[in-house]
Structure formats: structure tokens, C-alpha cells
Image (tube, rainbow, N blue to C red; front, side, top):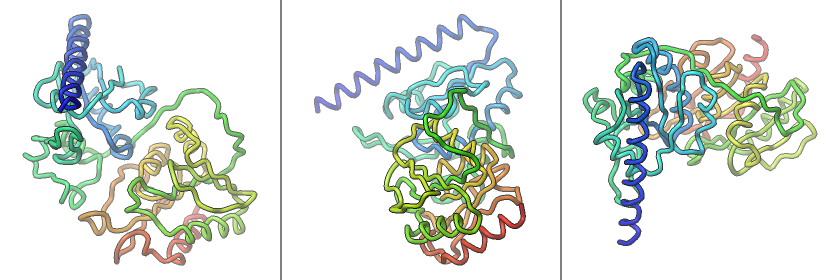
Length: 325
């Protein structure tokens, strides 16, 4: 009970402080349209939604755009020319307060109802705009990619577009010689993973056939693989470093994940290994390069999860992509 009270008081105090600060900015900069965007908890969704920023500027003109998320995700848009400020969400209770009332001229919540649940009060966030459009966690991939969903939730209609990311100019602390490939082998929940033994064989065969250097990225569970041309940086890179590593790669192989959306944003040729996910047998989460380019392939296991894809199928797709450069 005490934890609930302190959580509620802290969240309310933060919400009031944030609201006062934004209202003060609106008074100081009356010529600007102040827009709040609430989206947290999924890097891939955030990257995929990036094109709405330019669309909002086109729609409203002189804008100040505030993206509300967890601090750990700030590097994703810290250097974006259309983001005025990244704001800390602080807690899901603050998100609930913002959904009830907010200090912005316009406010958009870009996640679907029940995507996130308050860990203290066990109440899920609801998106009335998504509910009106009939877009839910059970059907969203049946009809739309991620940008098409977020653009509708931002009252922009169904958009097409190429996501873009921006990095700082600090050099990497890792000694990585180009050219290199980047692989991302483990999803957060493990639902989208391919078999480790297949990853190991794919990397070794790629090194032997094309003489490439391969860098593994991710947050946890690195591959148990040793080779002079393979380096695992799993758990050793922050978000900005991960973005820079992907930006500098000549090729990318991964799952349907946040890093893969980053590779799409940087337009890195790639191969994406996919399979059944929750309610969806097959889907397209990307817009732009990974949806349209012949330099990429988003491949699916038609009979189940990604882990069921045969090695030979993936290898053949990889060879075809390399031969068609």
C-alpha cells in the first residue's frame, strides 16, 4: 500500500511539473505549434514511426515536437532535427495522466490499447483513436505496417515513407575495420529467434565464402562462436554505439527487431529472418527500403516460428542477395 501511495504521489508531482514546463514553453513560443508524442517500450516501433515527424511539420508548419519515452531510448532521436526535446515518461501512471489531460496543442499516443500495463495498479493504457479505427493487438499486422498504424494514430492518414536516424559525430570506442557485416541474433522475448547452431554455421559459411568480418550486436545471450573474423559486442554497446555500428555496416542479417528497423532507417542491405508472431502468420512491419528494395529480403517460415526455418533456405536467400548486388 505504501509503495502505491509513493508511486502515485511521485508520478503526480512529475506530471504537474512537466505540464507547467510545457505550458510555460507555449507562452514563450506562441508562434509554435507544440506537439507531444507518447510512445515507449519498443525501439522498432519508434524507428518505424519516424516519418510522421516530417509529416507533422508539413501539416502544422512551425512546430515544437516533444517525444515522450524512457530515458534509455533518448539517443534514438536526441539528434533528430525535428525533435525539440525528448521527455522522460517517468512512469505508466504519468502516461495515464497525459491520456486524460495534456499541456500540448496536439497530443498523439502511438501505441495500441493494452500494449502496456501499469505494473503497480495493473491497469492497461487505452488508445481511443486506435479503438475507433478498429486497430488492435489481435489484428494490426493483418492490414498495416508499423508506419501505417502510427500515421493513422497521429491523424495523418495512411502514410508511406522512409525512416531516418541521426547520430552524433563522436568516434566509436571499438576498433572496427570496414567493411563488416552486422548480425542481430536474439530478440528480447525469444519469440522471434532462429537456432543458434544455424547462426553459427551461417556466419562461418559467410566468412569462408566472402571473406567478411562479422560483428554480433544485441543485449544478451551472445553466440558461442570463435573465429578471427567474428566479434561479439553483445551487451557491450549503448544505443548510440549500436546505431553507429549498424550505420557503418555493408550488410545486415537479423530478426524482426529494433536493430533491424535501424538497418532499414540507414538503408543497409540485409536479410531478415521471420516467422509466426503472436496472432500473425506473415506480416510486413517495415516501410521504405526494407519493404521495397531488391537489396533486401524479409523471409518467413510459412509453417511456424522463425526457429523452424531450414538453414538451406536462409543460406540460399543470402547467396542470392550477394550475387544480385
